[in-house]
Length: 295
Image 1 (cartoon, one colour):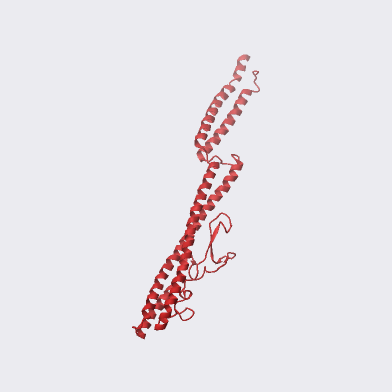
Image 2: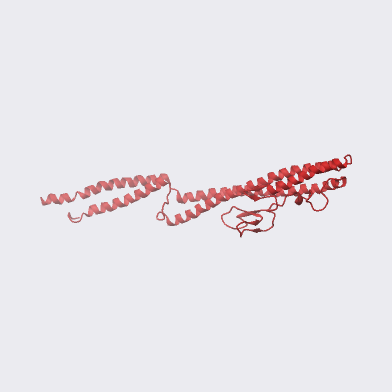
């Protein structure tokens, strides 16, 4: 290679190598500081696309877990209220049993019946007032067999969505809760027919016993249905958590930097940059040799 003044090819070549090594060092520094192997689309275009899909999947799954937990809280609210209704029905049957015997006078039965009606009114009050986040649970609001979510306010049974898509087999459950007012259970003054309506006479009290048994069974069916759905939701939460964990692990393989490997690259590029800077300094001084010849 000739010794020239106008073109310092050694310096140009060294500067190009310095630029390349410095760019690699910058990328390595960015990866180590962020903890990510893929920071921009230029790092891995296909990997970035897959990572973003997986991130969206993980976020959706985690929200699905929260949705399912909210549904469990709602079910527990309804079940707790039905537990109180259970106590009232048991007390009503106790009163009916008391009024069914012939050792009480008419006035005494009327007193017993007044408590019986009070218990029925309390059951209706509980059913009408039990709500979760403004959604009434036991007054028949969720007793419909169909679901309509086209309006601002959904009607019919309640839809619990926890999946990342909209497939009924995988992504949501319906919660249907039958009415638990006193009249719906067949007891109290609002009941249809005479059985269970009152215990003011011995005959009515005797007939009320069977009506109360049916009411207790109806209430137990509601609680059993809620309990089964709660268990199903708890299993769903476990499955969603596992899915989220595995998807996060897969996303980590694509996105996260291997610190040991990247630190090796960083050290290599750092040495190259330092060497290139030193060699560029030497290359830039070659022009002085030409000046020595001219002198």
